[in-house]
Image (cartoon, rainbow, N blue to C red; front, side):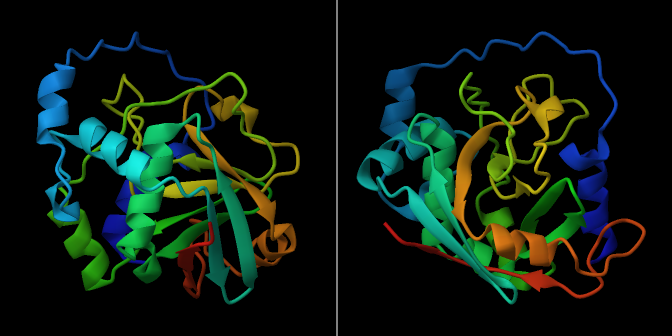
Length: 225
């Protein structure tokens, strides 16, 4: 992968194993009625100013919860949680516009996580620019932890006291012990329901010193139900 992807990763979740002083989140002041007015049906209307309103409306109109990732190593089926509505709706939205189909798993951290959702493809970069790199408010839930097979949103750590999620990049916990030091640091919004053997196969690919696979691990995601 090229240098700019590695730069994003350095500030993403995986690079930070050490504890960090936690800042008090700043409360976001919103006017719900105005937000709702900004939510329109056209998919290309999503932007950083109407994220919550758009995805709330989109989520109600698109209630799907089961998706499947296809790779050269097999399939991984995921269940998205309904009690994490904004992150669920966002993942369904990106799946429906086929955003993920030009992205890759760009970091394979053995016995930790499989992280993906970005690539050097022109379509991928064009879609990210089109929607303005919007961010998602965290949706932490006491019953949604970083267990084996958990699906969670990546995020930047620097200058991000509210722990806002990247809408585009995600990871799956591949460690059978889980990754519980990330609980309440990243939003868990789904779980693997089949394809654990595929995860194991993916974890064995040859990687460089930065844990980038030497050969891209491409993905195709579709909605099942």
